[in-house]
Image (tube, rainbow, N blue to C red; front, top):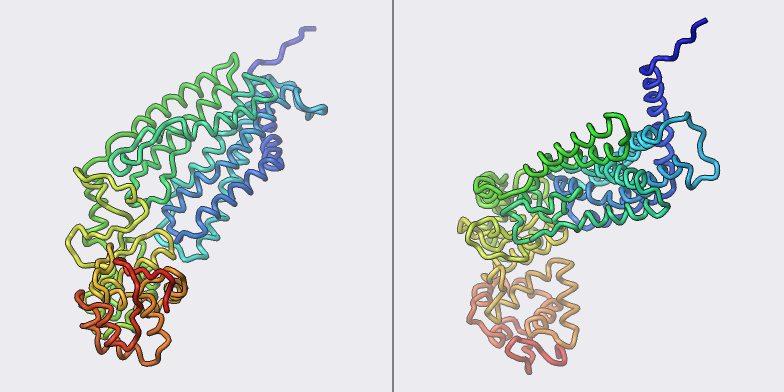
Length: 489
């Protein structure tokens, strides 16, 4: 009787099938681990904190939904490292019953199982998007930005598995988390380069979120970075499953080639054509404009849903001002200070947070930004009041009586009203605030102000002249800045 040994190919097929079966077990174990759920809660809390006060702009939300997955990624790196230790029989008194697989196949099952926490990450992002959609968002989702989150979680898990595979120490999973955090800051970035070049910070696995810079002018190579991150994750997978077989070196080589190709393609100077295109979004004719109640509202493409809010913010001040106050007014959206896009301009370190007060096409406009929803309201209200009174939108009023007229208009906004009246009751109130607070208590003052509007808004009209016209007292003992020591009388 002759005995025939089983074919090696059959043994290999059984091992691969067992590894895939093990990946399901490891995947379920990963997403049910308490530490992973703690990381998911941390990511959800971080995302809500970042988006709570901001007007929901979907292209910016896309970036936020990626980098706020950091706590979840760190927890997956930690738990995947523990899984490798368990597969080696180092930290579990009763390890799971598995088929006699080689260590590379056991780790392979763990790495494939990372698809489960990646799916959990995507589910968390979609849940947060549902909340965002309830807040009437504008623009559209950039999926190449969003998908960085799940892929980064897989990268973190592969990092934890690879390090623990080859440095099998109980402290290695914790060290892998520290390495993961270090990769967030290992490459320097330069704010001056934003808008002019894509810097080396994009070679970090998780690209720098660039604070709250609007997506339209951030020049983010999101698609290329997604390919770069996939290459890094693939290379780590090859290291994690390396053995005497061919699969590990192939995965490592393919991953490094992808990372090299996409990584070098994503960094470099931003072309003049791209900068000109961005400028066109600020000063060109591509903005979506509507005229309502003699006021022209212009929003960048995708932001027209905010025009209703801008009009609502303007209504109280237009009703308080003379009838012809709205003639020729244009409200125009500026996402940021825009001079950084132009060659030869000095760098302004506030370009990323303030709206531009200077129209590059020379128009007389009311600027409104695309940042915080509350900021949009305050900016447009204050800028319109200054425009109607004849003051500089950026630097305020120079004339004494002009300050009274400006504050009078601002009193018709509930938020501004509470601030002005509270300041008028303090020990360091301005003369204009004292006079306006007295006017606010007098019936019929609105008609009096409107009837004498031209005189009150003239730069040469003094406090004393305005007080005589309006029938209010003028406090004395104020300094050259109009500040009273001791408060209003």
